[in-house]
Length: 223
Image: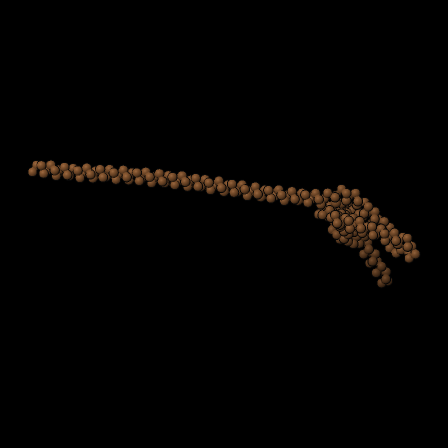
């Protein structure tokens, strides 16, 4: 009987020991799983941080690349413009030295009477020759981008014109009534300003005098 009791107690103790051992093992497994999960979470967090850092660096590199490309393109455009300007305006000094010749052609033609005697063939042929040379001269100018511009009856522009005097006239104030010398451009750049006379508008005193004179004439006619 006592022996049976001891056996029973042993069995119960073994069961308890088994349960304890089992629980300890389960706890250890759970601890390991928890440690593993924590390690995985940390690893994932580290991976996310690395990915985020790489993403930021990639965006910065892309931004720097785009900026560099834009700066390169701007430099290329600026360089092309400078080359074009050099080609276009390199002729400036040479053209300036020829403008006096163009002026002389115009002055020579201005001295010729509008109606030439029919029998003066020498003078007629001379005028025809001067006009032909003048035309060829301006054709060469035009081919090289050198153009004269007309200023008569246009509004005075200090960027294009140089006023030599001002006069009273029936033309609106500020408009050009006479052109002493033609202006020239190379492309869009001014080569030489036009020498002009600018209108001051109607002379108020003169207008009053004229009106008074007309009034007196009208009164005399009535008498």
